[in-house]
Each structure stands twice: as structure tokens, then as C-alpha cells.
Length: 198
Image (cartoon, rainbow, N blue to C red; front, side):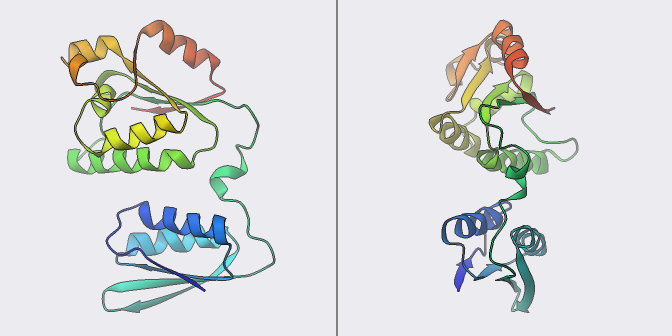
């Protein structure tokens, strides 16, 4: 049995840790300890997709999600099931510094979690940052480190030069290549699939 203590980790941290253990060790039983209901539900759902029977124990403000392997094989993660085509290029087009509309703090947190989870997307080829999205490459926040990690893994990151100039951020850009609308349009034409985040 493998046990992972994920208390204090924000979404999607507990699921990503569970995913890493499942994919590298394929344990017959896995225990994931979390401290909030959202993480309990997310980890339970993920382990269920991987061929585990789920049992949840509650104790002293935390949850222990126990997965016991049902059969001989554990399925590939759902996110990978429909995107195995070799050479497929997925482009993520981001035009906002927040994810969704409403509370800005929540939107910032959701965008950071979205960026952190992008590494799980097979065939991620390029990220284009336009309009307020360029601020993600220019802030001193956590998004810089996440984008740099994606870039180092081979993902191309293009940052709109016109937008950087408009927001007076040319000198503050910390990651990605400054680009123009021709590159943007060409990239959209070449991509097999575009995920649009506005």
C-alpha cells in the first residue's frame, strides 16, 4: 500500500500527486489523505477512473481516500484517452489573467490551477497570451514559474508585443517570446485543436 499526505495542498495538487503515484508505481492499494471536501471528491473521482474501488474514512478534520484496485489493469487517465494521436498540436489561447468572471481573487487562483494542470494535457504545443493574458508572463506571481516550467518542457509560449506595449510591460516580461498578430494567426491555422480561455 502507498500512502500520500496531501493535507494543505490546493486543487489540483492532491489529484496530481495521486496521478503520479498511480502512473509510476501502479499500487494495488493507495491511501490519499486530504483536508477538504473538494479534494476528497476530486481524488475519489480520479482513482475511480483508474480502476480503483473507493472507500473514504473521515477523522479529525481530514479525509482518507482509499483506493483498492479492482482488476488486473489500471486505465490510462481520462484526459489522455482521446488525445493519443501522434503529432497532434494543441494550442491554448489565453486573453485574460483570470479564469472566468466574478471574484478576481478566485479567478486568479483558478487561472493558476489551470496553468499548473496544463502539463497533464498530451500534445500541448503552444500557449498564446493576448490582451490581459500577457500579464501572466509579466507578474512576479506563481504563474511565471509555472509558465517557465512549461516552456522548459518544450511548450512554445508566445506573448503579444502590442499588448505588452499597451500595458507598459515590455521590460517586465519574464517568460515566452514576444510575438505579433501574424504569428498568432499562423499558429491558430496550424494548430489541430485550440482551447480558448477568455
